[in-house]
Structures are given as structure tokens and as C-alpha cells.
Length: 56
Image (cartoon, rainbow, N blue to C red; front, side):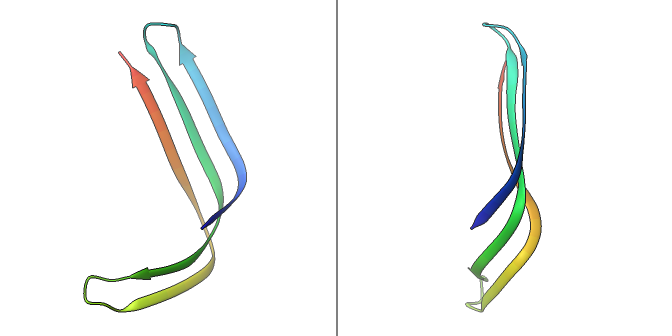
């Protein structure tokens, strides 16, 4: 789970071409399972997630 702290949102271009980007920075916590079945738990990790849409 990402607990967001800041959303860097940018939009550029016009109706027919351009881009929109969300870069969300925050703190990750949760657990993951490796390919060999090992489960790792983590919390307080700083990081980000990004969504980008481009139209050309």
C-alpha cells in the first residue's frame, strides 16, 4: 500500500496531442512473495508510483 504525500501532476499539449502525468510520492508498506515462495514484509519505504498518458 502506498500512503501518498505528494502528487506531482503535469498536463501539456492540447485536445489532439499531449500528455498527462501523475507522479505520486509517499511511503510504501505491505508484503510481497518472491518467485521461490518467500514472503517479505516491509514498511516505511519511501518511493513513488507513476501513471502517464500520451497522445501523439
